[in-house]
Image (cartoon, rainbow, N blue to C red):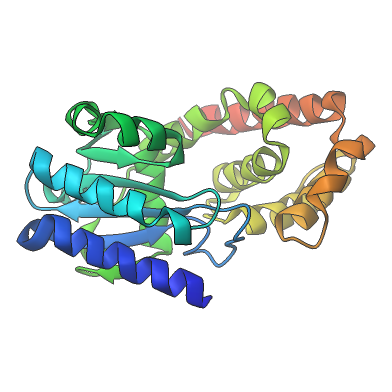
Length: 265
């Protein structure tokens, strides 16, 4: 493992212990880092923190300050995490409650109005169904019980609904973030058609082998860019990434995904 990543994970563990102390149950890293396709310039570090009881406002503020302090050593896309209660992990419900959330997009709010942010940043999140499913499949456990002992299996219908929410806006988002959306749509379809839980990299490989020939060059190009064997600077100049081509791909994949979703429900 990259020494930079090891240092960040050590600091995350220390920050959790410092903030939550005996209330802490476990820390589970998921996403690209756990699935061995992390790219320093293009990936964030995703993790779930499990606690026994609802953290106090003071604990929440302490933890967010610690995460903000780590920014200089983190990858450009930063950290993304949710704090959840042990009871909601052991006895899954959907959408899943969370006690605190943080990512780069919330950094300014945390820096300017931390107490207000920590007071209001809680609720339910459909995405946690997908995160918990991935954790049971592949994670880096920094602390706590084995993931399959702690995390209740997510019902298939809830996982499907969770990933379905992620592709509703695909035709709009693919223009803003083409590489992510091209590969993510592949891995969503792979799950729906073959019950496979894949990383974005593995999803791209699956797409190359399973999608119609028309879309294979686009997926190949996205995979090259994602794995850093292509240049991100070349992307806008390639006709493969013309808006019309991206929208055509997104609409095709969205149709296939919703068809597969209906077949499962």
